[in-house]
Image (cartoon, rainbow, N blue to C red; front, side, top):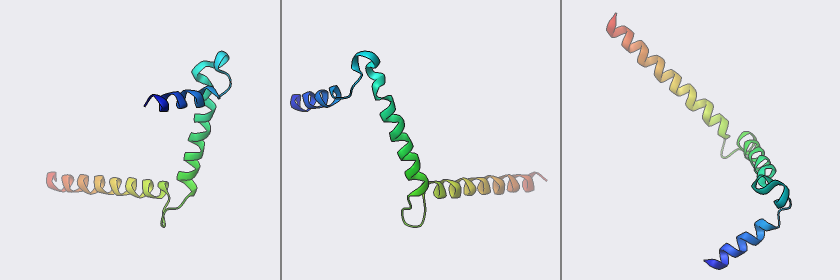
Length: 78
């Protein structure tokens, strides 16, 4: 376990800017990583759908369900 901790510390020490930026030196890396994840969710198809296709479909299904429940509630009250 100690060997893993030392090797991780060594790899993290290779990132430049430790004295000037401290832990903020990793911020550009995470920014790029987030952009890559967003690009993958928009453009990479798994099967026939992307992440956003599934999100829009589920949102549409929730809206439809909500409207049908409201319609049933209005019919019961009216």
